[in-house]
Amino acid sequence: MMKLIDPFARPISYLRVSVTDRCDFRCTYCMAEHMQFLPKKELLTLEELDRLCSAFVGMGVEKLRITGGEPLVRRDIMTFFRAMARHLDSGALKELTLTTNGSQLARFAADLAAIGVRRVNVSLDTLDAEKFARITRWGRLPQVLDGIRAAQQAGLRVKINAVALKGFNEDELFGLVDWCGAEGHDLTFIEVMPMGDLGEENRLDQYWALSDLRARLAERFTLIDLAERTGGPARYVRLEETGQKIGFITPLTHNFCESCNRVRLTCTGELYMCLGQEDMADLRAPLRAHPGEDAPVEQAIRAAIARKPKGHDFDYSRQRVAGQVSRHMSHTGG
Ligand code: SAM
Ligand code: SF4
Image (cartoon, rainbow, N blue to C red; front, side):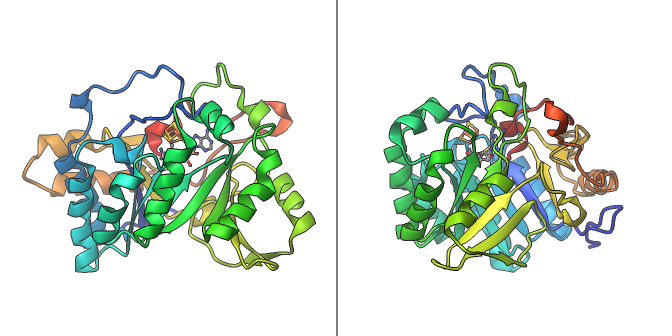
């Protein structure tokens, strides 16, 4: 079948799938404390998610990242992972992975490893239990650390994702680096993005530019730029002194769109061609209108990819937030 190529000649080989909008945490930069979640009938069933993801795999998607909300709080999520593992077994899919807050990893790590998941991204912004409770509102640090240990024991490689937050984890830069070094985890810092309504939390106040974080890191370590690119907004360095790999996801200070290879599917079947744009395609309608037929869904996917924009418009310059999109990160799946 013809592979997916967008109007800027970028092959689309990476699909990120949000399987739920729900979460057992309420991170302040991601969600409001009281969230109105979607009614069940709006959500794609696990079978519908299977159909859609399998259509993408059939059209050349080689990497699938499961995210949310918190993917591991979706009921029967292992059924879906097991379904996707058949594409690993057939060789069509090169990688099946997930981004999680880690709270349920102690329960799921062994099963995930058994079906062929090799790596997991765990979001963790602080190693201080009190600060962790504050930033996640509902989360508890020991539970997440147990989850991370379980993942390691199951043989999964763990990458820690930390959102860089001014006045919050600036003082933990070296603490996080040292801990990840000692535990053998890769570490990536993420710039806070203007998602959702800015209301109570002013994200300009929280914004800690990774150019500054990087400069501070360079005061203690020698940073060697790595050529490695994943088609996304991440850049990597190696710390010469420790050999650790550190990533920087900088959608705001760096333009990465020219090599973008990814699209995002929400738990309601909306396909976002760009994280930073409002345009999306409804894939649920053709999916539900044609239960036994794949062609209409494939057609809708191709039509959507043909509209993939060149890039996003996020911009924090001149001390205001521009290019902001109104949906929450938990909706598009981060
Ligand atoms: N619940 C899972 C987790 O926390 O890893 C998966 C979904 S979460 C939306 C995915 C990633 O998005 C997390 O690493 C989180 O820190 C990040 N994120 C959420 N809101 C963000 C924001 N406003 N700016 C930057 N990153 C954000
Ligand atoms: Fe939940 Fe992840 Fe959002 Fe935190 S960042 S509220 S863990 S979805």
